[in-house]
Length: 280
Length: 346
Ligand SMILES: Nc1ncnc2c1ncn2[C@@H]1O[C@H](COP(=O)(O)OP(=O)(O)OP(=O)(O)O)[C@@H](O)[C@H]1O
Ligand SMILES: [Mg+2]
Image (cartoon, rainbow over all chains, first blue to last red; front, side, top):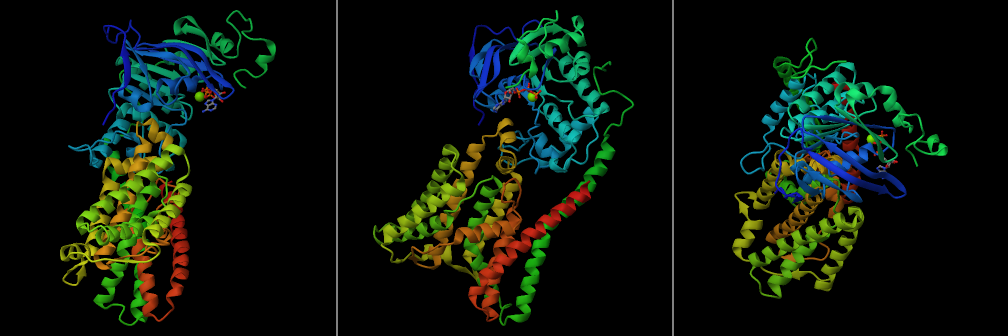
């Protein structure tokens, strides 16, 4: 059933390592009608590292993530995974290559229960991959939440009946349930979470990276970013305007870049653009 | 802020196995409450049944009960496919025309082209599935809403039926074997009832228990989420259309097992009866939730009403009046119950 992703090898594979990037994108552009959401974006994700992406509303962060997850097709630019150049036709291509994503809008089916959502699209099935193993699905779902240390109502609860934070927990737990992901993309994973749950998710992000997964996290919370990330990309109006190692930057510098000033305090753009950064 | 690699931070509540087990048990009772939606519907059906049993002479005769069941057969079978489609977020208004065309094509092939009845049946089933395929591809590839596409398909198929027959019924004869398999009797029970029960049970199993069924729910519940999870929603919808087309033509085949004529008016208006059965059965018209069990009860209820009214000496023309009321009552009940359950969960 599974279609082979469209990847072209670029020579012998060096394998995934901390020194060789797990995923490289170069020159991504994307326009929606008149809106230029991405304007030549290049990003590298490394196995074992947490890469944060920050930027104001509408800067293009989610668009970048959706392209990496195969949910949106770029107008131009290249995506390399390991040593092959890949073209994603849809999400299933990205999934097949071990890219797992948590979307900002969570992408859950409200009318279905927690277990069905956790295993959406990859339900455990018997010998002929036809009959769903319901019991196994329920047990494994409960195990995933226990492992994460997140209290949830029963796995048979409809997702539409959950609180915002619980829904976010379900979306994140999907990444864990899909073990074997080599690249994990999280779009504002702590947006709806309380203090404790946020810490659980940040711990999880770190744990994923420690098990040699390449993690990308989009967040507006710079404290979270500085506590969990290794590298920070700052986006402004569809472009990457700065890349910093976490050890060599601080909150004020990031804020400056996010609102469109360079670290030296010079505006990146003309004054009238600053009125509504990242929009139009 | 520091992070603790290698596990969740300590001194925080952790959902351990025993509390999880308690929660699971609570859930089972909740699950039973969910099931009450169908149970309640069944209760209304039984109330109706009791009312007719008390007022209508000969209502409880075995012969009459079997005739109610037989009256349910066609609508029940087509409703199974329609339930899949509606849960997947689509609709098919061409089922009645597809059903009618099946009887006509079968009659024509047997009568005018001297094809064997079983061969003709094979052609007809293939045609039904093909109509479903065309509907499915049309809807998913053009983006035309299924309501519009299949409305057009209904007109086209009705017209084809009239063109083939010139507006007259086609009379034909079938072999004994054919008449037995699709319209015979096992003791007192018409074999068509056995076919319908088999299709309802098989359809319910496939929807509730297979990956395909899970993906049907996901497609209608949140198409974007399904797609991002790697589900090919276009393919799921096309399969649902094919299933519905195939079952419509099979219902036509069953009819030819007992009535050896193809009539261009066969199946007219069935699309609405079928949708009524599905909606009465608690399936959400906007997709994402529903069940075959509910649909089967809905279909049986519609047949019951028609039969009971006639035996009560009330005009058969009052049937649709009662049907209309039942649709409103059933859907209203459904909404009320859903809200109750929501409050119970919170
Ligand atoms: N499907 C779409 N159709 C039209 N415009 C879109 C679409 N998706 C994104 N955009 C536009 O592209 C720009 C970038 O959007 P994007 O969602 O990537 O921003 P973001 O950085 O994730 O913002 P936020 O922090 O608010 O989530 C915005 O101007 C947005 O309106
Ligand atoms: Mg976003």
